[in-house]
Image 1 (tube, rainbow, N blue to C red):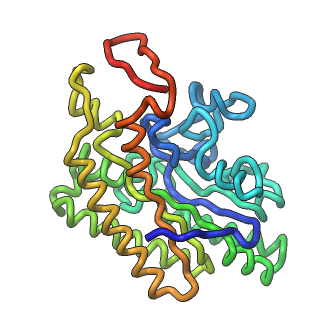
Image 2: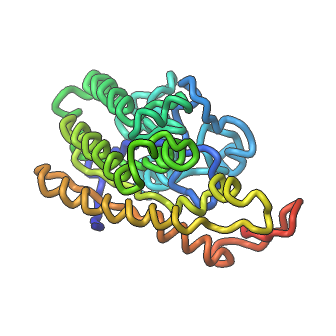
Image 3: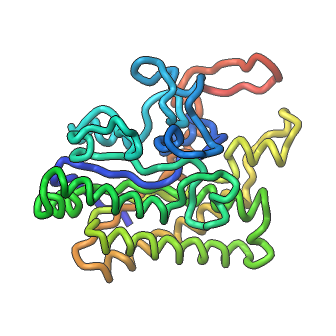
Length: 296
């Protein structure tokens, strides 16, 4: 399911997690925002994060520079970066043109945020409710409804759920096989988007799972000896099967929610292409230790 979504009201909002411990060049859909204003174990407020960001400073983003929401807002001609909603210095202009509700280590499963102390996806919906109240106080109820319905909601979640609760800390494996846990997360996903819809949100861009078997943390746990490092194929297969189910769910939601638009963003194929053809995306560099080569 692929479709084009435009921000008719010149405003975009974002929800979702900013994953910790990931290789940034492979996960350009990651972002950090609320960590500075929330008691979160996952933080990107130190170097080398932010070394290529304007001003060369860490901002809470789990990246060396800007992230997809920033680039998206810039491409739409809205603004260069998307600020966190919990920033006490947030301006009225920022409230009218897009904010970020993301929280590092978040997910749809309530167990995910117990360890990370992140703001769960459903608590982020509560922040949206507070945002709407503030927006109405600035532009009035009629204009606020127009902004909310015309905005683009960029969401990315699910990876932390599988990593924290199924693969590395197998709590949910006592209840589900992998297919069953996928269905559990997708059911939570459906509830989440229905809540957004009930608040007036109509345009959703949903990022699928990346190749989870190629995440550095998973490879390191599986292959501690550097020379043996490689992607874990059955985890990648899990990502693909989940994404297939997610596409079907988004089609279903669009059919049953009047005037809604759901766009699926396929991060899996883009990331796996970078992994398999790294020379297309940067220069070859030699790590300081070990014999492995990689592109940066």
